[in-house]
Image (cartoon, rainbow, N blue to C red; front, side, top):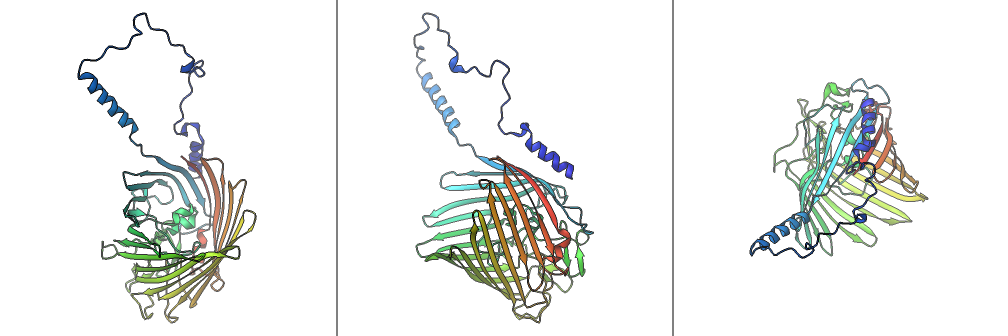
Length: 474
């Protein structure tokens, strides 16, 4: 796999990859311009204007020339994107998985068309993946040879409203890598193996209506068929499975029962937000399902229980930095009394954060998150990135440090999740350097640690990895 990665990088760096580069002219022809060549004079008698065409022929030819000009002026769809090679070895042996968490080449193509008052946008990735050997594309999981990231139409039917229909990336809330009221799908496989952070957000197949008024802005999102997280299932990353009672991987690939009926297994999400003084405040609502397979049937099948959420957030300046706060109340509709040990309990989730530049080009941010279970007596699992909850409250602290240097071409980032009461943690390290307008190289690691194998991050210890990537944009 390492040899394939080196070969791809060398291909990216080769002159033959340069888009639109013309071959050199033969010797002696490269410096002569057309402007420096004296045109020979016409023979005597030929300097006079061309004779007029017969009646009717001139009009026809003129119309043909105008048609050709119109064709030349027709808009050409711009295509941008990048080509990337990425590799990620494990730092230890995982008896349930291979030696690498990632080994892929990715071609991103995106275009946008604006016919009249409509905007059409399409973004897709062609992927060659050596770790998960799936060639048939899956629009649900993103696995396979093609991942459709966006395919949508935006239209403004009214001066105060936008309508966006189709596959799109949706997000809201104020948390930094902690999501309370953002119940849109996430890709935890991409997040834990070190892909670009944009791949943490999985696409939604939805309709979004945005309404703008002087008093409040409103976003309404309807997803006609449930969009689950791209969760850890054992095909790439090992995890703790409560049915097996152990860490499993490719020997126990998770295959849950997913709600997949159009217009009955649907989702609704809404946000209303406005500026109050220097702060942006927002209220949220959601109706649908838990995004991961966090419930178990008596027969041992994993399911997505029903879920309803309401919450609020604020964000604004404070003491030279940015203060954030968010809360959400989760109602487990399939177990409102909290007596079923196979279904997640209702809970309340709270977040407070602060970000500030503490030195030149050095930013620090700190967050405190708490998840308080409503019914202490019930036993709950929360797959894919979690397992048994022994305490009623899970406390989590995050710290991010970001340093930019060399005219902001170099970015160094450290992000650490740590639970002071359950003692599991996830350390994310990342360094990226922009060589020029086209080239970016990066490397980093994901380190998981903790004493127990059935807690949120420590179940992923065998997936501790490094990653390296080279990207060429065009």
